[in-house]
Length: 495
Image (cartoon, rainbow, N blue to C red; front, side, top):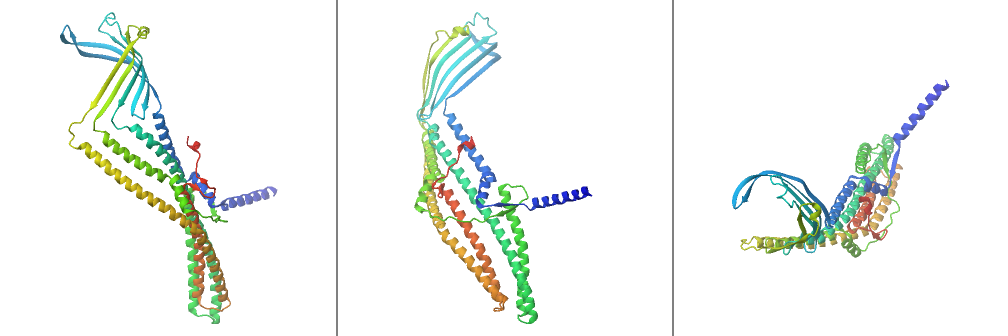
């Protein structure tokens, strides 16, 4: 008997625990939703990977400007072929069998200012001809203990010089773009938050309306039986009661849909119900539009992007003017070398090696090809200048108007809150007068109900507009006005 009672008690407790787990609810504020979305939403993952790609691209660029140490070799190169040879002035063909090897260690450095390269090398060459006795091939080794090579174009397009201007700018844009993406996630999360919050409010409104119309309809049936109201009023109340039932079902569906969309964006995979807490104690403050525009120019990626577009256009013009025109190239080598029969001998008392050459490219007739490229590049540059100028004006104007709109939100939200309070009181008065029979028009009651519902919804729309405007301004200026400092992030998370 005791075992049976214990088993029954265990089952009861287990069922209660399962029921509690199923009914468990998570409560989130707007700050909670934004924090989760910035950490694990799909947009956050994409933003992090996009910036990480830009980060390592810039690191690769920086590394490409550092000296590069390379070792190259052919160990060995076996050659068995028929070659042409000259003996006592007589040309003939003979078979050749040989083995050669080469090893080279070089340190190369780009010269960003001039667009050239300089390298320091050390190499050793060895060869063996199987068709000749060793006595004939007395110096099979050639050493270059050290040589310095300069390769310097004089008038050609210098990509290194333009990269030194554009690449760091692109990286700075990527950093600011990442911060803007994070603020855009805040805007998106705010929209999802208020979409679910509105669905919760509409669900609550629909249940309240159903309860009110249920009470009114039952009272109206009694009055109709006493002959105090017309049949049309009773039918209107019955219709309102049926509509209220349908609104509850529609509100349930809208609530499930909004909750599913929010969970999907936050990548929450459990089945727990989410209940959102409306933002309370909103701290209102004003933003100076002129200061906001100045902060946007200083901090946003748009201003840097304008500068990048102008530099890229100037680079294209410079490339068109230099390529295909008069060009010269200096190639100079200075170092030491020696041939010997053994490797140790190849490094004793090496002789000097010098080589200098100047290459020229002089176009005589190109039928206007170069001039055409220059004119095209210059026309594109003018288009870029005009586009940048117009985009800059539009950007500054947009920031200014957004700040004006944000500064209006305090008054708008207060009006919405007051309207909600007035509408509620008006409905309660109308409902009370209808219950005591001082008014018989069901139309007045329905209008009061509609005004109450709309006023409550409008309050939350105004609240949503306030927060969305705030995060939009943060995105445009990359400035936290509540803490009075620029928005930044820790680069260590991306290394």
